Amino acid sequence: MGFYIPYRFDQLPQPKPEQWKRYIQFLFNQIRELLTNYGQIDIIWFDGSWERTPEQWQTQKLAKMIRDLQPNILINDRLLNCGDFATPEQFIPPQPPKHLWETCLTINESWGYNPDDCKFKSSRQLIHTLCEVAAKGGKLLLNISPMGNGKIPPEQLERLQDIAEWMCDTLHTLT
Image 1: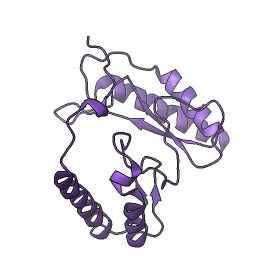
Image 2 (image 1 turned 90 degrees about the vertical axis):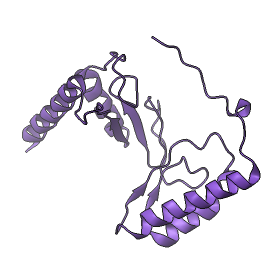
Image 3 (image 1 turned 135 degrees about the horizontal axis):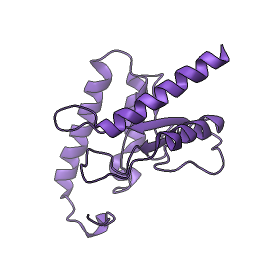
Image 4 (image 1 turned 180 degrees about the horizontal axis):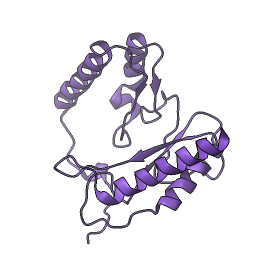
């Protein structure tokens, strides 16, 4: 079992200005392709952003391009200072945010498949989380992490089936 070492971007080698400029152009081109070649896109979800400033990411320019290409799109808050909804990770805010939000949660403790991570949240805990998030007006982004063969690990599949069964039972009770 390993231990967690937080990212220390200030201690990593930084790209040269011309390298960063090429990367930003690549980023803009990729987003332009995604938003022009595939019809209506409802949400664009960025991850990260903490390793650079909004100026380095050119967030205002990027958000303008995104909204010009897809006027009805929602952008998450990880495009700093440009987002339409908050994305707390691995926790539920104690007080409901005043704006749109979704909690981002893993079924165990890993975002990707990790055969050594056996700390799975129980189905009951996940259902309670779903209820608390919904009661506070949020949405739940529940991560699954397929194995190398594309199959969902049995522990995750079991929890998803339990949640689906609970949702069906609840819907049936309400109707």
